[in-house]
Length: 150
Image 1 (tube, rainbow, N blue to C red):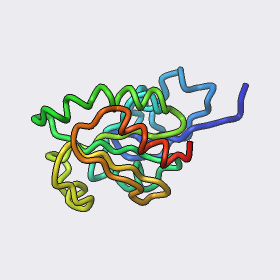
Image 2: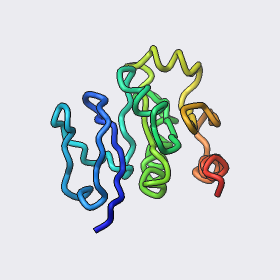
Image 3: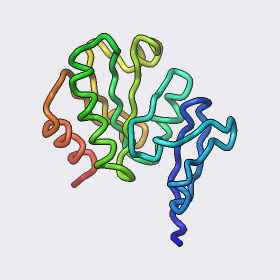
């Protein structure tokens, strides 16, 4: 049994949860609000809101790819499967999050989102890169790899 753990931000309440690697497949619950954390183990994007942005993105131990999107945006829907694949392919090296700009205008404004889709790369709590528009996966990965130093 490995002593490694990962941290997940609860999408419901924003609480930080330490999950031992051996327990990831157990469908863990948030220690504060008891909401399921399944799907939040770096295997799919986490939903970020104005309320949890600081903890989920700025406070993340891992670099973050933040997809700023809206449900009515066709280009956003075009890149959504790419963003989901990246979350799986880069699990445990990168946190992938999604911010609905219509539902979270404070954070969208603070991040100066003027066009969607916008993908922001965060490292150590600061913006390390910005990709605007529906770009191919290779372009997104090029930015990620530069940020990760690979």
